[in-house]
Image (cartoon, rainbow, N blue to C red; front, side):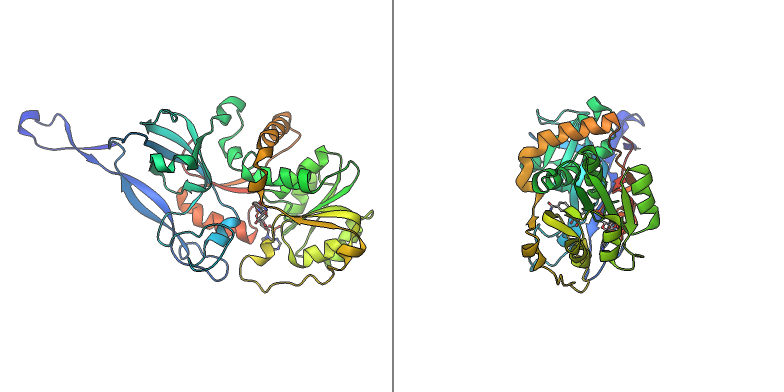
Length: 370
Ligand SMILES: NC(=O)c1ccc[n+]([C@@H]2O[C@H](COP(=O)([O-])OP(=O)(O)OC[C@H]3O[C@@H](n4cnc5c(N)ncnc54)[C@H](OP(=O)(O)O)[C@@H]3O)[C@@H](O)[C@H]2O)c1
């Protein structure tokens, strides 16, 4: 907090008379991209200011941003307001929003106390160093003091223990219907969801094979996370042959994060009555030419079940997910790798790096000391 000391006859040099506003950096959606977004062009960081001493109205509370998450769905939100998408679009020249973890600095709302950790829910948390949350915005923020009781890092509550983790858990358990001894194949396996899916698969007694976009990532999957096998899809001669080699008993469950030709290759290697979990198709998000999947007829001959899902329809599983994954993390049965950039200024680059596959594990940004 800054004070300016000035001349006041009755209080000579003794008292603050002006409150100086505090710098408040915000991440702004500045231009609609047609391809991969570019940091500084489509997403910028701008300075604004906030008076942290301003009185709060009834129901308001003041939060300080500690960490934020960048996720693939944000690319879909970076669109023109007139086009359709599966989530609401970002507003041009306004702060972006997403999953955030914050601390309450001051409160005039009985539900949020000073010092509480507060989660800005998926697509809702404001990407600004400070924000005053009004009564109307309250449903977008929930008290999340989990890190204080479990001792797990705050950042885990934006990935492994948040919607990202729930997506992997629900996808595999509900839509994959796994049985011990089956073979699970996961694409984008070294990412935020993929790393969790593969490790849950191991906890459940599956044989787990993953693919990722670099040798460092595939080594990490096998040596650090305990996958049975992994391959670099960028250097594989053909996906179909590579999957045949690494899944000699065929695939029973495919957790699809990428779509396109990888999906086609997985179908070629499926066993009868296999399950394809349609989680995401990131290979199609950044303006690339759509890739055709030419063997869908095999869904009939192999009697496959191909089911897409959206995690928000399975929030009833949140409690069991939280309990299971917290326990597995604390017991060390699951490791959750995070790439954390330091400083809100690096948010645009963090988002671009995640989309381009440069991050390992969950990409996050630390904004202030926890
Ligand atoms: N259904 C739902 O409710 C739901 C909810 C959340 C997320 N999702 C989806 O789940 C998927 C994974 O999300 P996440 O948060 O875990 O992201 P992530 O895997 O941490 O990051 C995305 C990864 O995708 C890979 N990738 C990028 N372009 C690719 C391409 N052209 N071909 C193959 N791989 C590519 C990159 O890794 P490589 O180095 O391996 O290329 C990148 O690291 C996404 O498709 C996302 O949209 C679905």
